[in-house]
Length: 264
Image 1 (cartoon, rainbow, N blue to C red):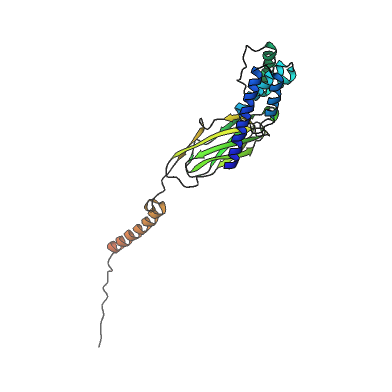
Image 2 (image 1 turned 45 degrees about the horizontal axis):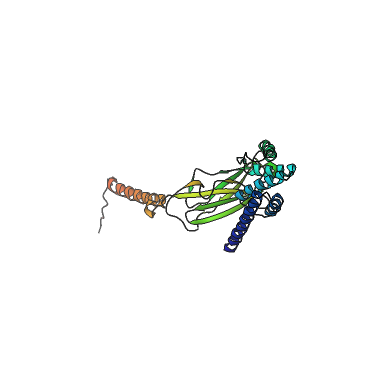
């Protein structure tokens, strides 16, 4: 896991460097160079959402500036699909902004990939917790998998990947109990990432900083003398003792007295 994490970090750093190079090429009006750099970036798997936003915004601008309007519109459509709130600078050339607006209209008509997390209001601090992942919308079937990241007292952060069902349905992830039982209440922290077939981030529900939380309740285990069966057994024994005592004290004496006669 440590080696894989280092590989991902190095890949992300390389991609950020290439994106910065493309942005410098755009600023220098080297549109052909920017297109080549960004198309190379597009072939990289496992992109973060912010990286894809930079990629498709720059690619759309470079293509539109080169007179490739239809290709630019597709790049801007990819941008508007994953970041519908994103806007480009209004000071750019109209041949860029007009193409961008057409792409935004198409994205608004098709909808935005969207997921939702559903969880119980409260759960036991030492029990498994069922979390539902609902697919609200999935235009162009971009979303393929959901990655639920969970952390709770007694369990370090873990990721749970699940294939996403069709839009309008749910998948369930069971977050296991803590590895070591806890002795107090706490919170289960959750966030969700939806990715495409190449593991590129498409949408998020929460973040590591702004996680969704589930309240975890804790009930102290009862001592032996607080357990129900102890009181039941004690009650039966006590009742038997009382009954015996009452019987002995209230028993009516016999009306006859046994006499032993020795006749000789």
